[in-house]
Image 1 (cartoon, rainbow, N blue to C red):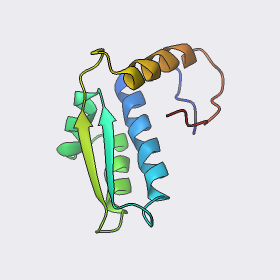
Image 2: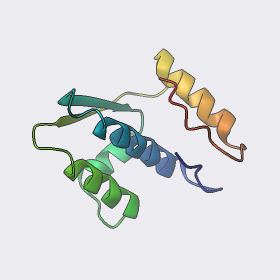
Image 3: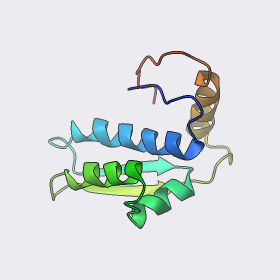
Image 4: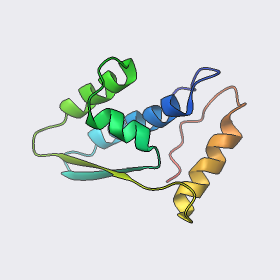
Length: 110
């Protein structure tokens, strides 16, 4: 996992999180065939859905998705932000705390 560049948008951060999830899921396809990615970024999920290839990050995500075996199903679910979902609130706190850090541990916390 790499640190996002200074000044990266929230949209870019959401896409990077989804890319990280897809990369981790790729290693699990011999054990599982159904995956769900939950995101509170409706704009990121919509951009993936319409396959906005003008955005290089969306193009990269679509290429990652395309590389999964045909028997694997990936579901994207939008969850509204700040509605009391403990995991979502924890991730938001960690993301805000990491803004000024110089490096990233890459430790999966979920």
